[in-house]
Amino acid sequence: MNFSLSSSPLKNASLAAIDFESSGEAAGEAGTPIQIGIAEMKSLQLDPKSFFSSHLKTTSSITKAAKKIHGIAPADLEEAPSLLELWPELQRRLQNRYLVAHGHGTEKRFLRAFPMHGFGPWIDTLTLSRQFFPGLCSYALADVIAHCNLTEKLFLLHPTFQWHEALSDAIASLSLLLHLIEVANLADHPVSFLISSS
Image 1 (tube, rainbow, N blue to C red):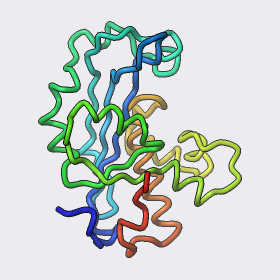
Image 2 (cartoon, rainbow, N blue to C red):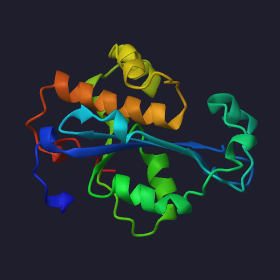
Image 3 (cartoon, rainbow, N blue to C red):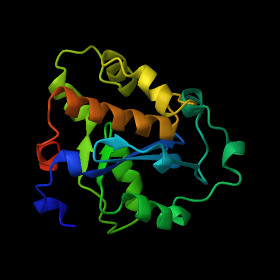
């Protein structure tokens, strides 16, 4: 599929939201991914059967600050696959889909583990939130979700929903995107209308 030339309307698009949780930035060491979550949406319908989550093996230490945010401990990663070992799974779930994330910089950076992967283009719900809701005090995903009164819907989609858990955050990003499409009546607009230029 040639995404760059696609004029497919949003109502017909296949999208996948992705989120990573990381080990945190330690002195002299970049953070590494330790959890991944993916949720898919087709024809403006979130598909719970598509939900995917996995811890990820890492050689980096988890910082205290990161553990305080997401609660992931080294013991959770002992039997986990590496990100590279998940390549077939990620290729199946992300290829030929528009990718969604809330502040997509981290997700794009971690996916560079797969050179020439070809995933994308991207729709960034952080950028869209700033455009749709100017003047909010915070554009953190949890705060925008609360502003849009979507919290109850998230628990209906994923009963064990919790913030800073990769699958939960991916579901939240996709739910926020769907909400923006619905309230702005964008279903018939081409996907390119929402694609991030960054």
